[in-house]
Image (cartoon, rainbow, N blue to C red; front, side):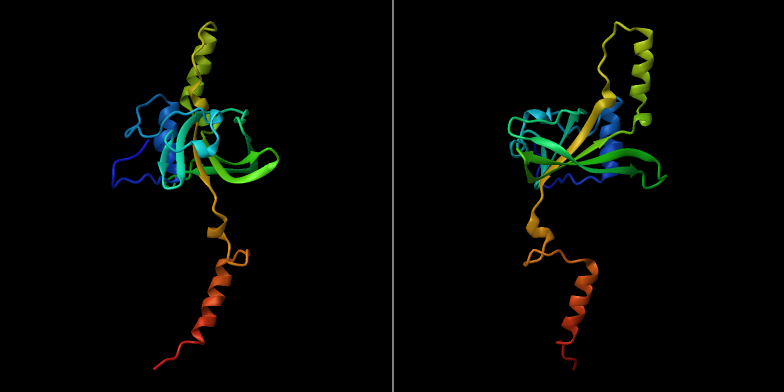
Length: 187
């Protein structure tokens, strides 16, 4: 799925959760409706182009929240990092970002997934589905609070490391730039 020429999809974490995921979980229309539904676990990450919304080297899609993250060639393993997402205006917690990496057998790859989910208490649809399940136990409505948005990308090591394979901190770069000042001749 592609956007028209000149349009870019570069949402913040807050925008992904508030403007897209929350609306999807609440069964509200989302305009523009550009993020497709995709059962991620039927596809390996390199199969996503053409199936998910691609922007640069990142792919976005809705999927169902699950603990089974196995594909035909590998699996997504948690990196153990869960990050809360807060609104910029009220600093209210609106979501959670979980980091996963793709493994081929026992080998970790450079494929990263950020899985955005709603906190359990913020989804009105989960509360209403609990009420409706009490009222009618024979009704099997899907629980729309279990939707997630996934952002998948292949991490490029050369962007993060210096030529000798070591990563420079911001302070290192400042000190290196100060060394360059010695070589500048002033008039």
